[in-house]
Image (cartoon, rainbow, N blue to C red; front, side, top):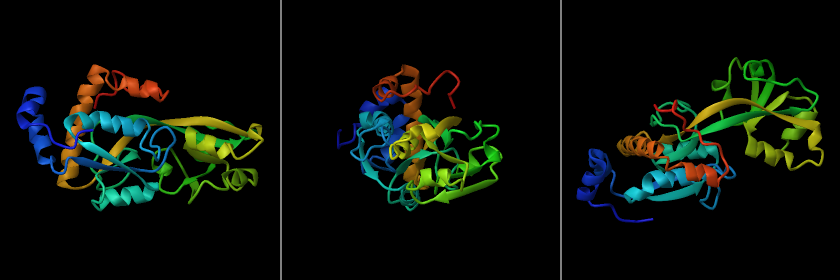
Length: 249
């Protein structure tokens, strides 16, 4: 990582109109990024696919990406108050007032965890069931026809809620569901079913700096997707590459 800013003359030659955006956010040349820990995506030690994408976008331009781990709702609050520049893992339009770029940076594959003898849910039928998920994930706005749901503070007790039939399905990403299932010796009592694929976005702060960083992110993503430069990141973390010909914003 480089702590200084690239010379404006260099940027003019490399990126055309880019210096107008970059120069305005040159000080400080650091991006404060915050996220909940998602294994392999935003690890607490600063490794992970999401952190790596952020570095690939901003680091070659001279920005130092500073990562911080916080619960999801606190991450949003820090960004909205201008205490951080960006949080990871947002759905499109999830938080009113947030500055969202046009480009997604990944796809969230959403799964339902239920008892093995329960009906097999789908995207079309998931709204018929009693659901629950971690507070702040707002799947009621992302999955169709949701009518009955509850939010929990922590993932402790998920299996007990299902076994005691207080709910039909727990909704989360596969990494978190795997973590929940790691607490039981009888995994055969449960079944995991994918019910959605949702584009993941960065949420930038509602400030001039946030808007400038979001515009810079879009410019860089256009270049990186066109060149295929992000593919090694997804390969390294053993994740499907989400940028086909139909994802251009």
